[in-house]
Length: 132
Image (cartoon, rainbow, N blue to C red):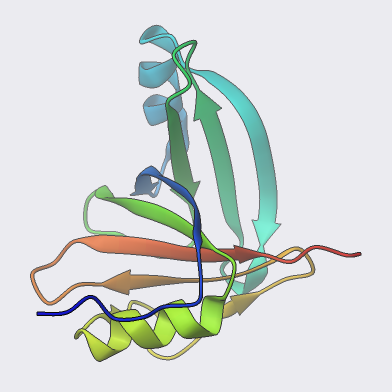
């Protein structure tokens, strides 16, 4: 199979945990040497909180807590791209489904959607919006 020609670029790629209670997850990874680098609250219409952590080796971890009632914590991959629409189409063409039906979370600084693969793993697809 030939690689599809994509114009968009992946700018960030790291694990992400989706949870109803970020506090114990954050504390666990702090004990492993991760430090909170960023904490964004009230993200979009799901009243989400996004915590970005990093350890001294440069590894990143994102923890997301929202009003979505997860039956258990979910682990996925955060993929930041420079062209959300192209990446969204790429993944949905490969059978991924939007966790929030077809809703895309758009705020002043980003556009995102959680996509679930046919086999069940999640991708948080994000494009940061830069004001030039």
